[in-house]
Image 1 (cartoon, rainbow, N blue to C red):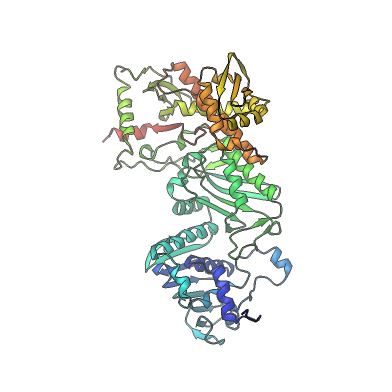
Image 2 (cartoon, rainbow, N blue to C red):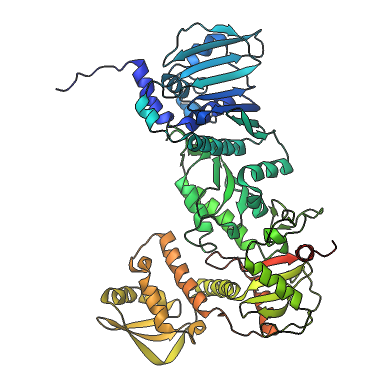
Length: 607
C-alpha cells in the first residue's frame, strides 16, 4: 500500500543531503576547508585519525562565527554568502548552499568552536546527529574556528560499510589537500594523520614559492618538465604550469584545473587540453598540468553540482577555443632546448643564472642535481657510457667518429653529428656536451609536421605508380576506402574501387614510393576509427592525424640504415626548425642531453 505524502523530519532531510555532499571523509575535509577560505583564514590545520572515520579536525585563523550565529551555522539553508538571485549568479565564495555543516552533523558527532576578533573568549555548540542545544557554551580557543568531526557515519552503518580501508580513505584526503593547497598559494596548510605531520606548507607570495609548492604537491620531476604560461584574451586569463609531452602519464593523476580559484573537474576544459596535446602524445597517455582559468563570475555557473565540483560556462565554445589555442601555441613555439633534456641520472647541478625563456613562457624549474650514488636506470646507459669512452679510440664497426666543429648553441642547440651508434642513435656534440638522438623518432616528427603543412596548403603531393597495384580486401574495408576516396586523395593516395572486394592503388605520396604500400593500405582500413564517418571536428582531425602519422612512420629512417655525417646534420637542423621536435607523434622522446658535468660524474672524473 502506498504511503501518504508527508513532510520528512529535519534529521532525515539532512541525512539525505549528506548522501550527496558527504560521500567519504575527504568530502568533509573539502567542505570544511572551503568554509575556512570563505572565513578569511590564512592558516589551516587538518588533523586526521583513522583515515578520517575516527576524527577530522579543521582549525583556521579566520574571522570566526558570532555566538548568536553558531546554531544557525549548522541549520539547513542558512548562509551568510548569498541573499538574492543576483548573488547566486555571481557567487565567488565556496560554500553557499548552507548544506555542508548540517549534513555533516546529521551523520557524525560534531563540535563547532569559534571566536571572533572582538570576543573575550570562544563559544561552542555540539551534537550527535542533531544539536544538543541551541544555546552555545563558553570555550577556550584562539581567534578563528575549529570543527571537530568524530565517528563519521556512526548512525548510518550501511554508509560506513561502503568506506574503504583507512589508508585508502586517507590517500583521498591527502590528494584533496594537495589540490586545495594549489588553489590558495597565499594560505598555509598543515596536515597530520594519526598525530604524525605529513605536510607543512607556509603561505607563499612569490614565483619561487609557488614553484616550490607545485613541486611539493606534484613532484619535482613534474616541475622539472613544466613550462609556466600566462595568457589572456577576450576577458579570459589562463595561467599555470604545463608539463611537456615527454612527461606524459599513464593515468590522469596530475591534472589540476581551477576556475576562479575553485578546483573543478570539467569535461569541456579537459577535452580542450587533450586536443592541444593530440599529436604530441600517445592516445593512451595523459598530459599533466596545473592550470588556473579566471573570468567574470557571471560567465560561469558553479551551482550545477552538489559538491560544486563541476561548472557550466555561458559561452563554452569561447572557453574551449581559448584553452586549446593557448596550450597548443605553447607546445608549437617550444624548440629543442638542452636545459630540458637531461635524464635524471645525468643531470648537472642547477645553474645559478636564470633559466632561458621562450616565446613569453618560462621554464618552471632547472634540472635537479645529479645523484652520484644512484645507479644507472638501465643497461642502455652502460652501453652509452662505453660508447662515449670509445669515441676517442680507433672506431669499431658501430661507429664512424670524426672531429666535430665547435657548435653555436644559439642557432644550433643540437650541435653537430659525430657518429651513428648501432644504426639507431645519432651522437652529436654541442656546447653542453653529448646529444643522443633517436633517428627514427626524430625523422618521424619532421616528416609528420611537413605533411601537416602540405595538407594545410592544399594537399600532399602525389606520385603516380608506374604499374598500378591491385589489392584484395574485405568488402567492408573496400566500402570504407571508397567512401573516403576524396579525403585520402588529399594525402597523396589515389585509390579506385575495382570490384566488391578489390581496389586499385594508382598514386602514393613521394615519401612512400619505396615502402610496402599494400601493408600501409591494409593498416589504414584496420583502424576501426576510419570505418566510421563522423562530422565531429575533433574526430575528423584525429583521423587525419592518424593517416599522416602512419605515412610519417612508414617513411622515416629505419633502424640499421647507415647515415652520412651530412645526413645526420641535416636531420639535426630539421629538428631545430620543427614544431614539437622533442617527441615523435607517438609521444616518445626524440633526443636527450648529457652535459659534461654529468659525463664527468658518470666516469668519476675529478674524484
